[in-house]
Every structure is written in C-alpha cells, then in structure tokens.
Amino acid sequence: MRQRTHKKEVSTSAQTTAQVQRKHENESRWMKSCLFALFVILLLAPFTLIMSRELFQHLVYKHRIKVPFFVDLNQPVDFSLNHTINMYLTSEEGISLGVWHTVPESHWREAQGKDLAWYQSTLSDGNPVFIYLHGNTGTRAATHRVGVAKVLSALGYHVLVPDYRGFGDSSGEPTEVGLTTDALHVYNWAKERSGSSLVVFWGHSLGTGVSTNTAVKLVEQAGIVLDGVILEGTFNMRNEKLPFHVFSWYYWKFPGWGYFFPEPWAENKVVFPTEENVKKMKSPLLFLHAEDDSVVLIHSAQQLYNIAVSAQNAERVKFVTFEGSLGYLHNGLYKDPRLPDIIKKFVLTL
View 1 (cartoon, rainbow, N blue to C red):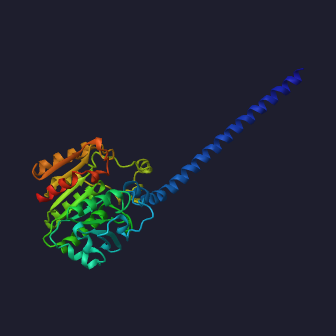
View 2 (cartoon, helix red, strand yellow):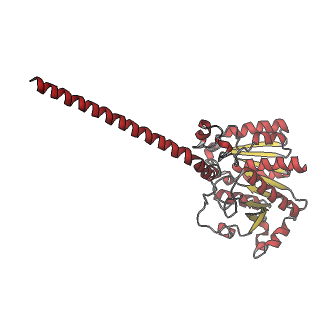
C-alpha cells in the first residue's frame, strides 16, 4: 500500500515538472517570436516609410484619381468647349503641364480650326485673362471646372485651366512648392502675351492655397501685384487637419532615426499659409463660399475674410455667400445664375 502511494507521488511530481518545462518553453518561444517581430519592424519600417511618401502625397492631393475616367484631355471639344485649345507648357525642366485655353465665347466661330499661334495672339485683345487653379482630385475636365470656364468665357474673358504637375496628363509629382512654381509659370507665360489685359487668379479649394502662395511670391520677389484674386471654397490650414500619418509613431518612439531616414512628409510638407498670405497680399480679393460647404466650413473663409479686410479694406475685399438651401456644397457655385453678375462687378472694380 505504501509502495503504491510512493509511486503515485513520484508520477504526479514528474507531471508537474513536465508542465513547468512546457510552460517555460512556450514562454521562451513567445518571447523569441516577439523579439523577431520587433526586429522585422525595426528593420523594415524605415524602408516602408520611404515607400509611404507617395501614399502621403496621394492623401493630400489625390492626384491619381483621374476623374472623369477614360477621357482624352487633348479634345476639350468633347466637353462642349468648342472654342478651346489644348497645349503643354514646361514650368521647369522635366515638368510638362497640360493647359486648356478657352477664348471668349463671342469668338467661338472664328476659333474653329485655329492653331495654337492664333489662340496665343488673342490673349492681347484687351479682354481679361483668368487663370483657374483647381482643387485636389481629378483633372481640368471635371464638370465643375468646365462649368467655371464656360461662365467666364460667356462673360467675354479668356480662361487658362492648367493641371498641376502630377494631375491629369501633366508630368511630375505634386508638392506645395511645385504647384506654386507651376502657377507662377502659367502667370508669367500669360502676362508675356496679354499686353495690358487684366490677369486674374481664380482659385478653388486647394487652388486657393496655390493662388495666395503665388500672389505673395510675386509681390515679394518681383514687386508684382496681381490684378485680382477670387478665392472659392478657401481653407485655412490652421483650422484644417491633414490626414494622420500612420507611421508618425515611429519617429516619436525612436528619436534620431529621422537623421538616417527622413520623415516621408518632410520633403513634401504641406503648409499653404493662407492666413499669413492674405495679410501680405495687395490684390483686390473676392471670397465665394456656399453655406452648406461640408468640405471647408464657411467660418474658415469668414475668418480669412476678416483678416484680409484688416490688412486692406472693405472696398478691396468682398465676401459673397450662397444659401445652403441651394445645395451647391463645395463644387457647385458655377451653377448659380447670380454668379456672372458677381464676377462682372468684381472685374469692373479692378
């Protein structure tokens, strides 16, 4: 009887020892797996960060969304712009910009079959020239962009609609500096050919940041004051949050790594200091904003308007709102029947 009890105790002790050993082995395997996973993360994260620069650009500019799809940007006539020519301008080495030039609607019959030289010669006919700087996503063929071109053309104005680098069929990748360089080049190109004609910027959404950047650059570098600037659906970067970058934690946890692996957003940092820009601008300004704009809330534009008025005066800075019940949201102001008179009145004050 005693012998059986002893054997039973020995057997139980052996089982306990085996369980403890297995537990230690499992913990050891788990620890090794965690260390291996951490090693892989530390090894691959810098390279993933480098590859993610393009993702960050897309989150901001959405330039790879080529809407509308399956269109030929060489054929503006497909969008009922039958007095428009497609051309390409080189804003800097290696960067080709696709641009549409629409002449005043009154010239549509004369424009039929004309070449690029004829279109360029018309820029000096005394009619105002508008450079439309569009927002992010899509191309110059987007419905609301075509709509603005038609409104301005019907008023007797020339319209230049470029796609920034990386957008549409323009080459390169978008950065804030690059977009500003593109807008500056289009302005200089138009100014060289327009003689004494007014040259006005119309910026929409992202294009408002590009417009104000370019206007300030012209003032600071060349003492040139734009004849006028329209800001539609303008944003204040101080109030708008960019998408959170999924890899930013890496630099918080491992300070100093940025020396070897620059942050993916460092080279393409998005600032668009519109609030500071409107303090420096000397051009007459017209703010256009829909009350139901859900992309950029109207109070953001109102704040910028107040700052601009303080920097200039209420005679040179105007703000026009469009009732939310009209349903224009962020892109639909071109539909408003009052818009032509609003634009015409603004131009007459320039």
